[in-house]
Figure (cartoon, rainbow, N blue to C red):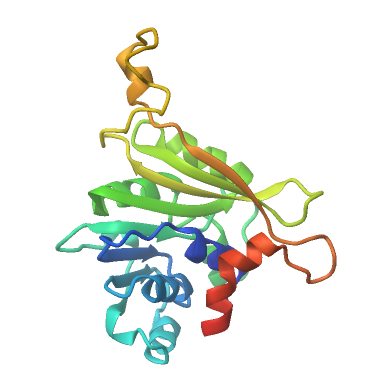
Length: 238
């Protein structure tokens, strides 16, 4: 699968902290998101892993200014091993679960959760993510709800942006950021000593930050200012 809006959105939206030094792109494809992360984090080393051939990703990295900090491995993420966990993991994964597969095997692998079921993706993230790390993913809205159910009690949602293609259309994609559910969560802003005491679980539960992004204005090839602001640097530099 070539470069698409989903990958550009995730690469621009995923939060990159100054202390993030090791990053992983699961299902890297052409290496787009891995290169976007390398561009955004000058001190980070980024690894891309994919079950399919990563030759094109390596070619793209070699032609970029960040080739020394980006590496790729052809390997199912279920079998991928690393000596150190990652501070940030991102994925634009295959997502169709119940729909008919395509006769094109490569397209099926890229779009259908045959080789990477949601449970396997969750388990890989839990195995490879550092204790204070974060995981960012983009999925169609229906599949996002499936993934949230699979992650319940294991990965905790802390940020979500629903993406509309135009103002009049319903949200088509969900950008979601998770932390390990066993990580201590910061108390909500309204948990204070001068209000009636709530059960401890209420104040320790993370409240996700929720927002919305509209990509297009509804006119042909006319993007919204918010989408242009989010992705501007990448269109200028790639």
